[in-house]
Image 1 (spheres, rainbow, N blue to C red):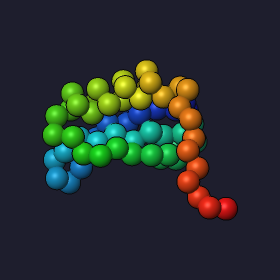
Image 2 (cartoon, rainbow, N blue to C red; image 1 turned 90 degrees about the horizontal axis):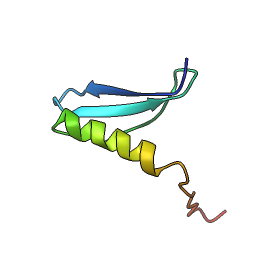
Image 3 (cartoon, rainbow, N blue to C red; image 1 turned 30 degrees about the vertical axis):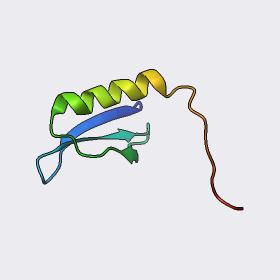
Length: 61
């Protein structure tokens, strides 16, 4: 199984997505969107803009 985005409707009827690892575990999920197109747009934005994202560790360890 490959990494994938999974789009679904929550109990409130909003569209959300989660990102699943190759082992099927959910790694993160989105906020709710009223329109499916908005959720799909957010997925495309992540795919396009996140490959070089930095990590900002704000812990005091």
